[in-house]
Amino acid sequence: MALLCAISATARTFDAVVAADGTGGYTTVQAAINAVPDGRTSPYLIFVKNGEYEELVTIPKEKTFIHLIGQDKEKTIIKYFINNGGQNDVGWDYSTNNPESKTYRKQGVVQVNATDFYTENITYLNRWGVERQSGPMGLAMSSRADRQAFNNCRMRSFQDTWYTDVKEPHARQYVNNCLIEGAVDFYYGAGNNYIENCTFRLARKGSVIVAPSHKQESKWGYVMVNDTIDGMDGSNTLGRAWHNQPSCVWINTTLKTKLAKEGWSEWHISPRLFAEYNTMDAYGNAIDLSQRRTTYKVDEDKLAEGETSPVTRRATINAAEAAEYTYEAVVQGSDGWNPRKFFAPVDAPRGLTFDSTGKSLSWSPVNRAICYVVIDSSEKVVCITEDTSLAVDGRSASYTVKAVNPYGSLGKAATVKTLQ
Image 1 (cartoon, rainbow, N blue to C red):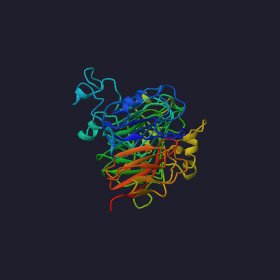
Image 2: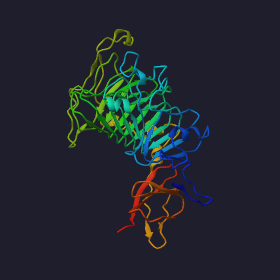
Image 3: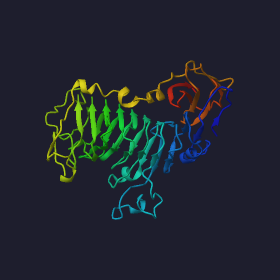
Image 4: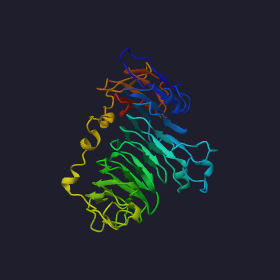
C-alpha cells in the first residue's frame, strides 16, 4: 500500500489521494469530492492515481477551490457510458433524460458547478461518444461557473463533448495544453473563455468545432490562441452560431487538417463575431481566408430590428485587434485571477541517488516544492512525501521523483536506476 509518509510540522501534502486499486484514502473521485469542506477559500488538493474510474462525478457549487490532479493524463481516466438523447434515440437506457436510467438528470460524465476549480493530467471520457462514434449528445465535461481552469487534460467524446454552461455573462474559463476531441459542436456554450496551446481533434469528416451562445454583456466570448486543429480531413468548419450573440475568434491557429473554404457553418442566427487572424498550415504558411463566410442566413423571427437576411459579418480581424485579446484582458479581468500560476513549473529534483546499502533514495530540496511524488518503474506511486529522502525496498528497476508546486501541479521528473 502506498503511503502518505511522515512529514514535518510545516510541510504540506495532498489533502486527499484517490486510487482505484485501494492504495489511497478513497477509491472513487466522487467520494473524495464529497469529503471536501464547503466554502473553501484556498486550494484543496486531490491527487488521483493512474486508473480507470467508471463513475459520474459532480462537484457542487459549495465545493470551491478544488484542485483535481491526475498522475498521468493518458492513464488517469474518468469515464462513463452516458448520453443526453431523447426517448426515440438509440441508447435511451443510458440517457440523462430517462427517469429509469442511472444517469437521469445528470449533465455529463463530470459536472463542475463550483468556482475556483483547477484540474490537470486527467482524461475525461464519454464512452458513449468515443465507442459509438455517433450522437446523440454525450458530454464528457460540463463546466458551469466562473474561474475554472484546465491544464494538460483530454476531453473525449463525439457530439457535444464539452459544455461551458455558464449563466453569468462575465464568467471566465481558462484552458491550456488540452486535447478536445469530437465531431459535432464539441466545444459549446457561453463564457469569456481563453483556450491556448490546445489541440482540437476532429473525429469525422464534416466536423463542426464550436457552437457558442453568448449574451451581449460577454465582451470576449470564445478566444482561441495558438491552437491546433487536427484529425479527419473534409468539409470541416470552425463552428456555427447557436443562440444569442455568439462570438469566437481564432488567433494564430495551425491547421493540420482541411477546413471548408467558407470556414464557418450557418445555423438559424448570425454571430456577433466569427473571425480569424493569422491562420497557418502545418508548415507555417498563411491560409487564404478570402473565401471565408461573411453572410449568414437568419430565421425571420431571430432577426434584430432593422435587419434583413442574409446578415453580413466580417471574417477576419487585423493585427491590432488580435493584440487586444490578451490573457490579461480576457482571463485576469478586474479581480486579477491568474490560473497560469497553478502550473508554474518546479524543477526536477537534483542529486537523486539510490543507496543500495541502506536501500534509500535521497535528493536535494526543490524551490517552491510542497512535497514529492515517488513512483517506481511499474508506474505505481510508492509514496507522497515532504521529506527529501525515502526508504525503499530497492526491488524496482528505477524510481522517479516529481516535485509538487503549491497548487498541486506536478513538476519535471528525475529518475534513478537501481538495477544494473
